[in-house]
Length: 309
Length: 268
Image (cartoon, rainbow over all chains, first blue to last red; front, side, top):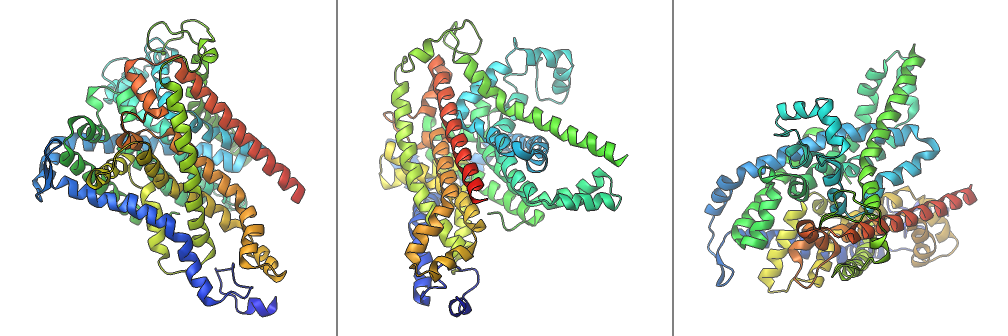
């Protein structure tokens, strides 16, 4: 053992200790990476290039498309669809904030308070995934419909008036409104918020909170100075995993919204598959990608968490 | 005073957690209840009358079982391939030091940071330009692509917790690197690999947005069937299949939990 460990390279435990030669250590990781990374390169990176190329072509489906370098399509796409883009980003942003507010207590509860129920509650958090999300979104149509208790309670408690005042609904119904869309987005992506939050809150040593209490911190101070900073990696990962899919989603907007809640994903989908205006659709898709990547990069830099994986 | 504050805080958190849990689970309950409905019109949105028609005749509406079959085939194949490719990447990242690590991490992270509509539409442009047909094979390729990253994350998390001393011990006892991998590293990583595979299958089985971009009229997956039905009228069978999937997955996860609990007890 001593002979072998003397030559150990730290952080590469496997294949040391044995007669592993440097040559073996060199090619093994690359052989392991090759098939998977090749797949991602051909079917993820390369399509981004063909997407960009498609946006700069002109023509139609019947006669084919020719590359003309028509950059003007981006101005056209932007001037026609910027409200959809802004709407998508604000719905996704609102849903992300709501998911953080709802997800944090549950994640904290599972990580620190659930005790022997921890695994059961965790399973219940991921359980909704096991029913197709389209079917679950259809279930929300039932829950939010006018003749169900939820809408009736909301009307009696004056919640519908508040929602109308802030512009999230335009009638005293809940369904087919921006409110329903944001609620659906929050619901759909909430587990993506909870799981990373749970992962970082689970590592939180409860003795740190006891120490804060011993040093006369109020619970609120202890949260602000200890719990929250230590959970920040989970907050960053959770908000990204919620915001990104929510901004491109159009299922909730189509099933729970109205004609005024169309999101950018819906426009891309119908331009590609129904209108068959590939260049415009590709340009919109490319803009969405650039906007998301820029926002994510700014956010990650600001939050200062580089190690997201 | 502090004790009272703590008591209030603890129960406030538990109460909030319960409400959020209810928010997450109510739609599943609705789906289960409405699978026993005898809907009045074409849509299954209002509870009309108790009936077991959907359960006794799950393939009762045209095309639904073909769609489920296609989704199962694609889901199983995609999760198998993605689990193999993703596990290999996770082992490389978790067990080796090599140049190009940060580039690899970025390539793994990017598909998770890209909206589905962008991935779906960009793949469509690739297939269009290469003159490749859309359909089941294109869907399979797409599903493997977006599942790999999630498998890597799940397996890597498990590999990171493994004690390298166990592998060293195997090597000291004369195991070759390959034997060590097969008899020590792989079995110890199995829970992570199983979690990754399950995640990949559920992502694939449930995907609509990317699938729709790469499908052909003859390749209708279950989510595509549900989407089409949401415009024409939702048959009660959709709710039955949703409930069955939910129960199967819940059983699989619970059994997995039991096995790992028992194993932990044996070790302890």
